[in-house]
Length: 592
Image (cartoon, rainbow, N blue to C red; front, top):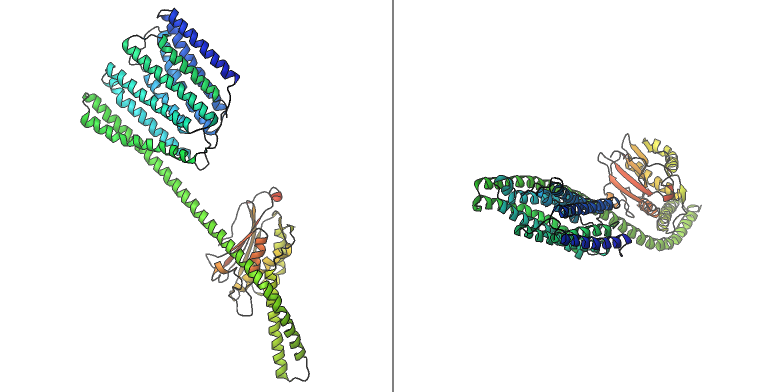
């Protein structure tokens, strides 16, 4: 961002004033001739070359769309320099008048198109990563082809098909004025909607190009009257405009993109480019209709114009289909992203509801469990005394034992409620999750072998440590393994697949069985939800496991596998201190 004029800019301003004074003095002191021709052509060529060189320097000193802006501006000045060099070659080297029509006129007409492309990329604000540059690029090419078509339609016929010097000059001047006016309006719009250094730069370019356009009109009018010669007073506004372009390049050195504070205005400006492209495409049939039915030009001119219109329609049609194809791909990408965001939101909402449900239920059962525990302990004590009384018959002793059995079952249930409702998190430290998982499997090996279940291990080596409580972690693994054993009860050849792997910044554990699956996976972590027979489960184990995993900043999910069985997946974040301890391993999901 620029806020003040540097010493180079002040020196250039002084040099510009001195140059204009010398130029005006020479125009007054010398008659039209070779000296003024050399002075006029060489000064113009040198100033255009200097402006282009400074803009190339600005491109190398910047980045992103700012670099693109300066490269396009430099391309326009290089085309301009090519046109000036052609004039200099004829008038200075060959000492001949420039022919009319001149072959370099197409170069002069084309040099404004890169200027338009430069402002179309809106370098004054930083583009977000979601903004796709291909759309702006295609719109630019559509407008470029349209301007080239207008030149071929309005000027080529009178230049190369049926030569008409008067119509050629008139049409060229009118079309070139239209092109310059469009660019001037674009600069004014950018200057009005930008800030700081960019606003200053745009206004200087606006003044410079406006002065150049006005000087071109004055020179063309003088040429028409026969009162123009190179190096005359008519060239002074042109020299001033070129010097102003150089000052603008000096002002824009190291200017950077800034965030746009007016997103609504930016959206309107973004919509302008595709609308202009649409107008350009829709104008072709109208122009073709005029050429076919209204144009009174010679038949050769009419045929050329119709052919040019059909060619432009074909080329622009290809660009339209290409743009639509890219827009469709972008729409599909956005739909996929939206679908994924919706799934993430749904999963997050489910987790929040589950956490709130567990928290509310925990507060309720904590108080109730303490109140129930005291009478249950009394019932259990008295039942044991009755069962040990020698004066009771066998029927009475049997009834006392049944009372004690049910009291112990109630005591175990109350103990589970208290464990579930415990709100104090366990003490956490760095734990090796792979070795703990191996210990869990070794401790359960007898139960698994007795049930005829084969264990398929796939635990990655050198997994990074995570913060957690080893006892709580093992309890979670035991609960999931026991749930899998119960699910594979009565299923011959049961297989329990246990995997542990690193995926990006997470440790992922997966327990997959070949049982009958889960009837309602979305409810499996709800308190008291169980499909086991009465007396075999309370429905609190997986709920407690869910709470422990959440306390470890992790996630646990459950789903039925495609080919039978269920899978529980736990995800634990890797601490930042451990991210660089091991190299990242690719994800190899267990087949489901």
